[in-house]
Amino acid sequence: MSFKEKFAKYYSEAYLKKYGDRITQVQGNVLSVKIYEKSILWIFNKLTVSLVVKLEGSRSVVKCEYKKKRWFKKPEFMKLSQGNSVIVQGLKGKKSKKSADSKELLQVLNILNLTNKQSLMPIEGGMPKIQKIRKTNRMR
Image (cartoon, rainbow, N blue to C red; front, side, top):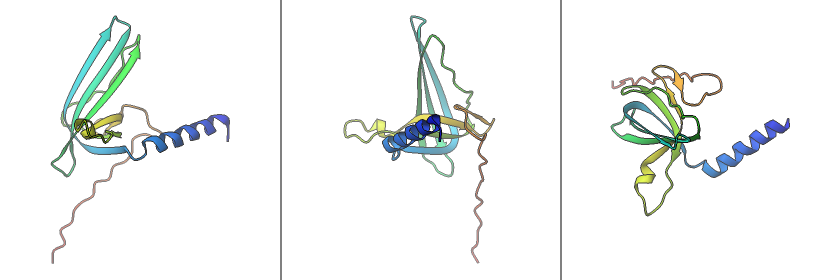
């Protein structure tokens, strides 16, 4: 193992140890996308994206939030529109007694748009193949 591989392995193990129980992903259709951009003195740029995703096979919805801060360059976000089929990977909110809203909010790490085969962060091996499971009615 090279130094680079050891360092990457150590980093991934530490990340999983810290956030392992909070990592989750949801799959469904986008109900709404709101993008907020803010620039402070043309130097510091903030991007906040709020997503509402309706889960596939369920009536429930999940609120997702993506935040990115960058110096000098504007942070970029992928094209998403209402009705797109997506997989959102992220972290669930911390459990606290004070704020019940943060528990329901999903902090986005990556978004895979299955409609036009794009992802927010490039993933190894390309887009995953999603298999839909058919429900068969076997009542005899």
